[in-house]
Amino acid sequence: MSERTILVWFRNDLRIRDNEILLEAIRKADKVLPVYCFDPFYFKHNLSGNPKTGNIRARFLLESVANLRKNLQALGGELIIRIGNPAEILPQLADEYQVNEVYHHREVAHEETEISEQVETALWKMRLNLKHFIGHTLYHKEDLPFPIKDIPDSFAVFKKKVERDSNVRQCVVTPDQIVAPEIKDKGEIPTLQMLGLNEPFDDPRATEHFVGGEDEAQAQLEKFFLNNSHTIIGKKNTNINLSKMSPWIALGCISLRQVYWEVIKQQQLNNTAYPGMLLDLLWRDYFRFMFKKHGQKFIAVKDELTGMTESVVNGNELFEHWEHGETGVPLVDAIMHELNATGYINNYSRQIAAGFLVNELKVDWKKGAAYFEEKLIDYSPASNWGNWAFIAGVNDPRESRYAIAALPVTEQTAKSDYIDTWLPEVYATGVVVK
Image (cartoon, rainbow, N blue to C red):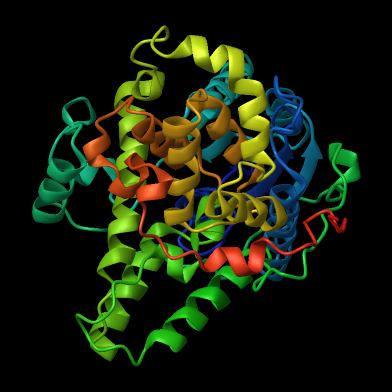
């Protein structure tokens, strides 16, 4: 009998812990071929002339892929790395290594699903199956108390029913060994320059530097709970924002389930409450399931004509002031300076910046969503575009996590801690402003 080889296509699941496709491949195959493709689609320039993936976000990705390779090698495996279209590369590798089946985690946003469909079509021509797994949500869709088509559009109703009638599955075990075929050309991790990007400038004002990878994700989670283990239950509403786990969650360097069960364990051990953290995990599920249910209709503009005249006439200039932090509103400008310098701002600040662009400047919300896609190191299609759609009123604004986003900035009561740090003379470019 010939040996069975399964190709594991990594995308936004850059981990060996709680990774069902990796574990299942090891169990079902004699040899496992892990592959990561740097798809040029994600590094092209958008209509505004900006890269779809900015250099800070890309650097975090490169670090995460490098760490995945290291961890796979420690188990006896290897990660093949290629630059190019997965629909061309994966069939080539499947043919070269006599692959019997390809595994991957299913995505929900239209760009990602379209790429999956192209790969599936290409593999089908070779009579190979692309097997889909669900590994990006806290609750497995088969455990929901309703089919996808009947998921409540209201987050409040969704939350109530899911928490009452569903359970979060336990994490799958971490493999202790991988048997890989003989790799002829593992491929090298590209540089930023190879992806068409410059090295980012590390602004000295940044209090934290995010490093990609599963190892860093584990360290960040441990550090967070160590620093918060003294908190008495009911006194703190800690969320993903404060834990700063979202960059690693976005790339799947750590799973939502692992974060969830660690929160539960810490609550039991230390009598510490993290309701906000659990709520943020559920919001991530909600946005993904809404994309699964509605597709692009979930973020479709209700009325393309409403308010578009002002947006078309003034949108470009007003948008440029906003993206460069030159609106004249100190809080908004400071938030945008931090985003541009570090690739990260907290969720509350995102609501303020987005609400200002949409409600005050009357600029098309999709331009802001695309800009966040470029800059945020924790960019996730469903969460990013879903949040912007809420703020823009495409979906019910009452469902937004932060009602403050619907208010004019002048009426907001947010603390302006950003201003002292992010409005000094030295900007992210290192240029002194006279």
